[in-house]
Length: 273
Image 1 (cartoon, rainbow, N blue to C red):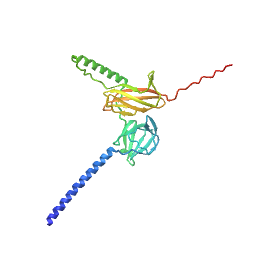
Image 2 (cartoon, one colour):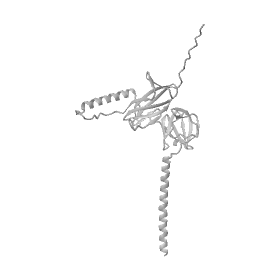
Image 3 (spheres, rainbow, N blue to C red):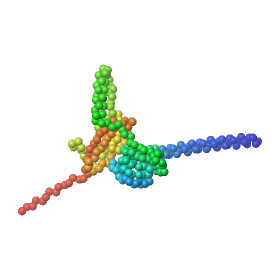
Image 4 (cartoon, rainbow, N blue to C red):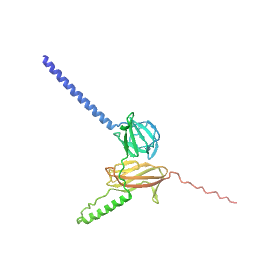
């Protein structure tokens, strides 16, 4: 009887260990899923200097205690701020950055110095902007010449086409057209009577479109977005990129916003003598 009781106790311990491991694994999985669905807020603890946040097409001053998840931040030269447990500084020039859902710093302009409180100098992280391959006029001219030569060679080497056969010409990545709803164009400048601009961009073989600071992933041959402009003259930059972040094509639109009502001139009264 004693031996049988010992065997039963061993079996119970084994079941307990298996149950404990199963509960631990399920708890860890639940925490990972929760952190993915509900990412941790990126709150600003303090700001020493000038920091701005990009909201509705304009830069406004940023104050401490604000969640900056999925926002673009501009840090002026010599400014220090704290986000969570990290201290961010910009020493040499102004910097612009955003924070991904994984908590990674994506620098769009300038250089950031990121560290933790009490960290040694050698452990500080310096993050630079990932500069894309920007096309110069000379480079664009050479590439256009290469494209033209390639097109001519393709046309000369292509086999004879028969009636009803479809063309298989290569479509090169480009921005086809940019339009702004309700805008009146005069001398190459578009005029709007409202600060709200609805922009539509038609593209071919482009993986990502940036309209100002707004990033769009096209699901078809065009993208649409709405941005808010300032009173007066505005310059809107449209950039087309491939999947690696390389700039393929760029466009710029000048939009003049005038929301003031037209002046009504009252005719002077005519006096009769």
